[in-house]
Image (cartoon, rainbow, N blue to C red; front, side, top):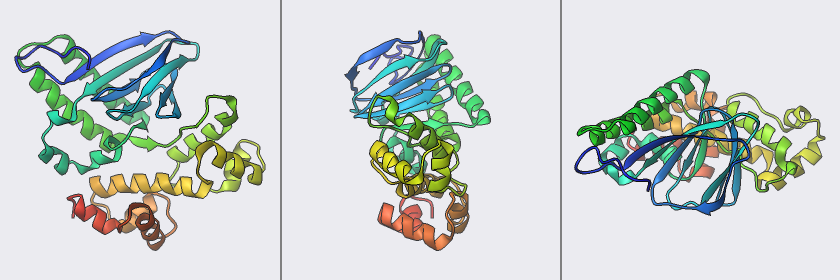
Length: 281
């Protein structure tokens, strides 16, 4: 882990840094570490590679790296890329807190990309600025303050973030138009989405688009859309008091029964049981 803040005698396992990378800068070597990395891109664009998958990040996106996952970055575009990174060890927070905030499991279980609305983006950046300021001007209370800010930050991610599954398997132009479609799916999962409309949006015939989509993502279009909807529904089950029927509607399912069937096939249990077992009856 980066050098830990020494503001208190016990040290801190929350560390925050801000850097600006010039376009075309590359961290070409893959590396891994035993702590979480929350990588927030404030300006510019970059490519984040982890475990054989490639994610394209634009300003306002965040990437969360799970401990042990190998990763590297390269920066793109024509403007400097400002990023703020938070490094965090899970065991700093007791298990009781994790159980009470089970919604964090949605994005803490594996590496993932998050996007935010404009309003949410402003809130996330406020949290990051507060953590960065505390990290850069430490005193005897810094460890405690950083821990409190980190908990607030995690809750903000649950409340405001949308998980995006828009990775591709190769680093070439073959998947660029598919990435556009994937990004649209991730941001509009609550709306009716059809393969024909998706194909038309990038000027491809439906049959060719279907083959290309599966080649790039490893999943067919219908299953990919369902997977994103189920992931968002899982988050809502743990973080809201909305009924199963309300959640099914908000996540784009045509009926509550269809949602329950899809959820059971994907998660191995009903939405109601999932919510109950995670501690939100």
